[in-house]
Length: 96
Image (cartoon, rainbow, N blue to C red; front, top):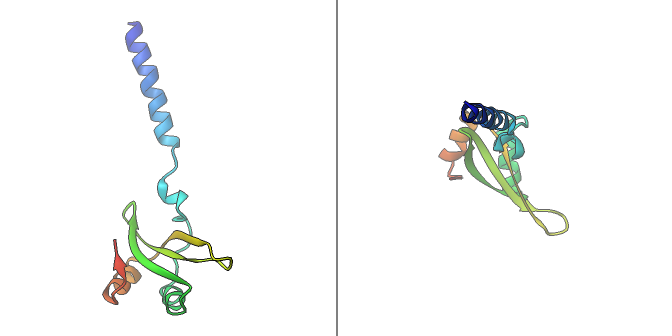
């Protein structure tokens, strides 16, 4: 009987931990408003960053990688609409 209580308590703790764990998408900027396709094109055209199409937890997104004013490389992921993702893919942007 004590074994069942211990197993139940461990299961409850595991469920609470899993429920409170934040999604990787929130940690990766995916809670942001979708980036506009015009801003992505403009930034790539001006050489501010490179764009790679990705999916984070099934959500269409872009990984933008560039250099800061002091020369350090930065990279972050931003959500975009499915229509914009499809358009950029058709325009030849790399998809991973």
